[in-house]
Image 1 (spheres, helix red, strand yellow):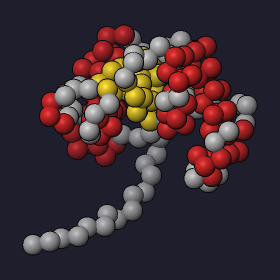
Image 2 (image 1 turned 135 degrees about the vertical axis):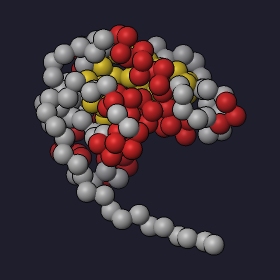
Image 3 (image 1 turned 120 degrees about the vertical axis):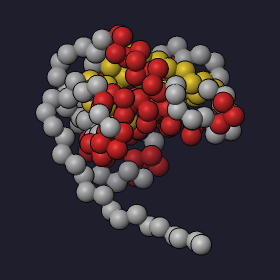
Length: 185
């Protein structure tokens, strides 16, 4: 697959087949992620790979509770209160894997995590896998409780919770707005 083809065809996938993702494939995705550019070559990444469905269910429930208990968080997200309050809504869409990219705090570490996340998502698409960055999980995983729950190493800040799995169908493209470009010659 050509790079531009992957960029234009990758979608946020929210429906997955009940198939596992092989460990060597996950390792390949992480290897692609760490090829991302990063500030002063600090390579601040930490990857937590969660494949335990019961653990993912617990993180989903705790993340939903945390978001609902944080009025500022939910009000900023408009109509999501209904989703978060629905006991049948699973923030990870029952994907078989969550790859959490965390960083050791320093200047530009969050940007480094985002760049690694993009590499991981493009590599997954290239291999026929679907991904979606799940922002609903990020805030709870950043709490002391969330960090302890996944045994996150001290000093690591969760940035990019990305679900990975085999897509169950085709996700249609979402129209893009025209970019605002300021040309300065």
